[in-house]
Image (cartoon, rainbow, N blue to C red; front, side):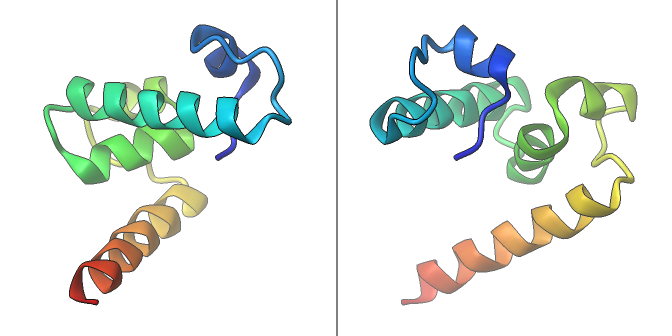
Length: 85
């Protein structure tokens, strides 16, 4: 998982190269985003990718950033493939 420095600090990451710290913080961050977006997985993923403020600035919608608009469906498709296995 890739965390921005401020997000890593918020979750207590002291060594961004430590995989255990990085994964733990990333999971907690995703959980918080899911709570913030009331279980709306696409919005939580968009907030993870584009930043929490980006979803808010775009009226609670997936921001129209190319990377984010590609990222959200790609993650959802990967999750669907895993669920079918």
